[in-house]
Length: 115
Length: 113
Image (cartoon, rainbow over all chains, first blue to last red; front, side, top):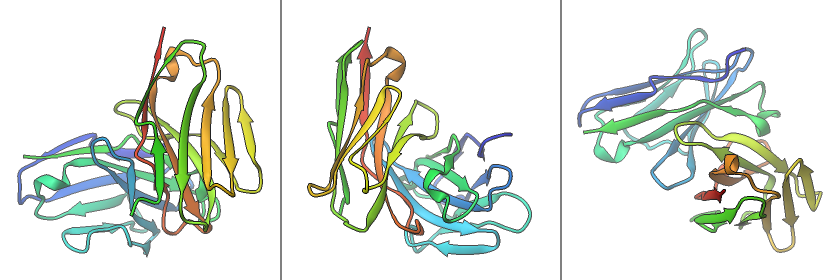
């Protein structure tokens, strides 16, 4: 049973380009969370999604960032018109249900570098 | 506003010693307090967690001590080993979890052989 799969592992984008980060949750998991980790910082919650629904996006920047978790396929975190300040590691986590989200599993992350 | 304060930022412990990392929180609505271990290039992995109805939880060499009145909790690593060298994060979660985990800034732990 594969864990949470994130790709790509590393992504380099020029300022102004779009970045798409993918997260395939563990088998049977229908709840996905995205976090951002800046250098020397803890992880910061961005968004919580269930299949086809955004449950809580209170940690997501209001502009340029969006997330989706379609009925089929991975969850996508999309960053439009990237800026240098978007450079960070982005982690997703998945769980089987909201009540069991206490012990959710993180992927290995995507490290985004904006040049 | 940082809701979970973690200290120290870095820690060096001799092999076989006890590593202690402390966290303090502000939000009394938190009801779940996990610790995560992160190795370079990897995602955080759940190490051990506690709820506020108990004051201590032990799993192998790892122990969480929880002081609800002081709003503090700590991780103790007994008989620390070089393989324990990693970054450790404390975190807290409000019941229901929709807001996601609130993390401390992390502690870089180095265990010297």
